[in-house]
Length: 227
Image (cartoon, rainbow, N blue to C red; front, top):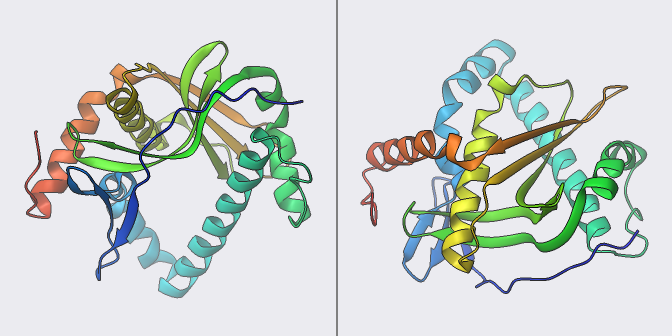
């Protein structure tokens, strides 16, 4: 099938990685930390405990493999939605299978596409990033995030996904004037597991998002532009 694109023009942002590995984006309002980096404070204790249990070397190996796989699956989905011919060329069977698992969801539930891998920032929130996809989902303009997982994830484990999507919804409204309330997380799960789809409302997560951003700024001795 061919997806209909009504692309919204957005200002490109340069990403800057500091010596400590923290990613920032250069915006017209100054350098803002990436929303991914900002929300990482929510999972750092769990990650540190996991590293202590499995060892630094094994943790690095697993993290790298998951990152490479996640990036590849995201790329093939992006190419498919962009109507690229030969979008599967060069990908290994496991990546193609991960894509095929979610393909019916993309075909049947995504409508007009407004942006993919688009740069966004919010002066109100003081963060920036690149959103996976902004498109109609079940007829509603939505922030859509694509994820991969070895096993099905309970909702309680992925609240950071919803907060990240909430940040993108707020950024999008600031940049375009178009409000988005619906958040969609699509997870391709390994093996015979069915893909997962979580649909959330932005306003249910905005409070926790703002609290976390404030905490990040305070811990790093940064001056927030508005909060």
